[in-house]
Image (tube, rainbow, N blue to C red; front, side, top):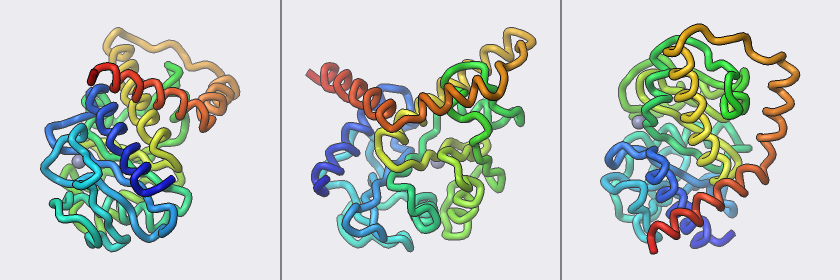
Length: 233
Ligand SMILES: [Zn+2]
């Protein structure tokens, strides 16, 4: 993909995320590693909504968090991205948002249960960051988030938000939306009363495997982009 094509995908990811309620004013940010230079990444800038990302306001940033191209203001939480990219060569896209149900779940101290199909995607595969409710504004704090993420694709920042890291834009966007769906279903189920036992581990792991296939993320992301384009017409 060319740099322009990557930025175009970030632009549409932002619009999809706002349509899915993943926005919190101008907070939240997405980044994509440059395929021709893995020590640099593109990142959404500060002061605009995720549906206001443009070819011109995307910044190019290095693994120390320094802006190397672009004139927009940088998010102070850049270290979430730079520190994960440093230690996870398999990760090429990172997304941080403040989804309501996920945050509500993160404060409860209960494990995410595989009581829905979206929850199965994250079965025994979530990191939890509990150092602070504050913004991740230093190398050390970013490294703490990367440590809490470990080998997983999702780390919940307790009482703050979610960070999703994956090989593609499609995967981070769909995983983030599915995590929010899983958290919403669990909160409703727990409020309704006692939850029946989960299905056997093998049954859950089979579904997890099937819905983790890369093409599943692409098909569903592409659908949400088509829907966002229809809404814009
Ligand atoms: Zn945040």
